[in-house]
Length: 332
Image (cartoon, rainbow, N blue to C red; front, side):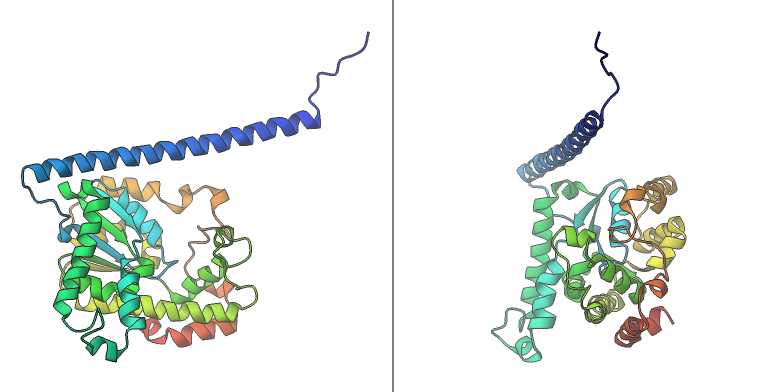
């Protein structure tokens, strides 16, 4: 009688692995679809409440004093901070609307002094008129996208790549609250260079620059962007008379809970300590899966001072020269 081999072959093992991978991918898609459906359900519920309020003539807008801006530059930990705040009760997150880029780039980059004095430039004379338009643009956009906030709660706006427009936004919405998030520019540039390397998370999204060929050029470009975004954010912070708090990424990393307490105390928003503990634990560096951390990943090091290992002496000199005024003030 012919013997039948019941041991799995390499082909069987490969097939099983392929099936498991396909099942895992389907589960990920199902999870994403469930999250999208839940988000749509929340939007529908918010819209129903909004329509009910309008039916009885109640106020239907987002209260500007309930808006919390996070201004900084990219790769400063704003995703981490915003995620923790978004998980707080009665908090909703608006991820990078780029409204600051829309108006800030036009005003500060495209618009010259002559433009700003002109009666024809849209952000020229009649400042009160166009500031009012910026105010309505933000509030109407927020109410349309996040109707659940109309009933109360806080809208956290993460705006790292729109921070160039921070002075205009805070002038248009002086009642709103502000967080100025600072990180050592050398670590910011080191993280940006890594993000633009071959095989990085940006490269996989088709957004990589030629850092492999021009790392010093990228260092200069990112240092200039740091000055533009953080400089304008600091300008807004210095003149803002409402609730505000300045936070260093390094402090947030060293003692997250204590720093979160200080943030909410500065913003004068009452929160429970146990709730803060919960979100801090949930979003801790240690709870990020190991396969999602490391070189070339979105979550890279979370190690203040890592620039000493990552940047060449030439790149350090470039960053320190360009960002010198901010370095002296925040990292003497």
